[in-house]
Image 1 (tube, rainbow, N blue to C red):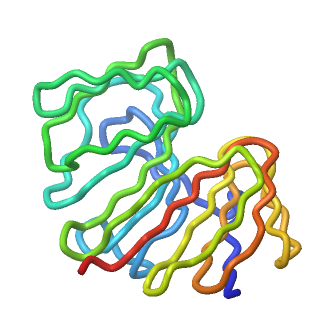
Image 2: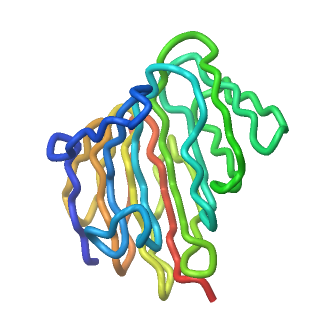
Length: 187
């Protein structure tokens, strides 16, 4: 198994232009690509106040509330309440999107893929399970709460630590919640 460890402590916080929060990129492809060039990008954001989301034309997004009371999103004029943690919500990143916080700041987990170049499947695990990397894909594991251990790799992940798996399979033991993101090149 090919394993790349991505520790939370090594991520820089990037302030939003509107002052409403900060983002910490967990991983992206190609590595080092900017917002206009990425095929996929995974990040965690500290959202301090509501307001409009940046629009990303041609981008599919999956957002998951990790901490806080949640948020109400209005996407393309349709309201959606994300008031429970660990429930992924998919939407068009190019749609006009506004956010209202339901009870103060939140932390969210954000997966973005460029349509026609990549796709993502986001699952949340709070139990022991096998993790296998499908052919032509990579799997990103991000510990969102508590700890997780990757058996064969003898690797322990703390809160917001991540590991990028490029091939093989392993046993994932979870004491909390882990995001399991399978990223594929678009067909």
